[in-house]
Length: 110
Image (cartoon, rainbow, N blue to C red):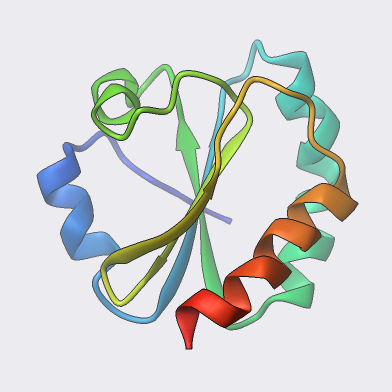
């Protein structure tokens, strides 16, 4: 999974402008992030139409605040630069919950 360098929300617009992008916000100290991280390769493989990008919440604390990401792990989906959905809260997420979230985007993104 590609790692997002430190950037602002304005700079992020260029990263998410083409195609479908899924931002995965996490942090090294976060136990709930560590819980979902091993499942991410399978989730990525199941949704090849999305480009998955890992965002270190601590490195991108200003970006997270600009995007109202105050709980991790969290996911924000974009299609051609427009936000199409978010799974943002402080709760532990299972692979099934993440997949259900991505499946729910299909009706919004096409």
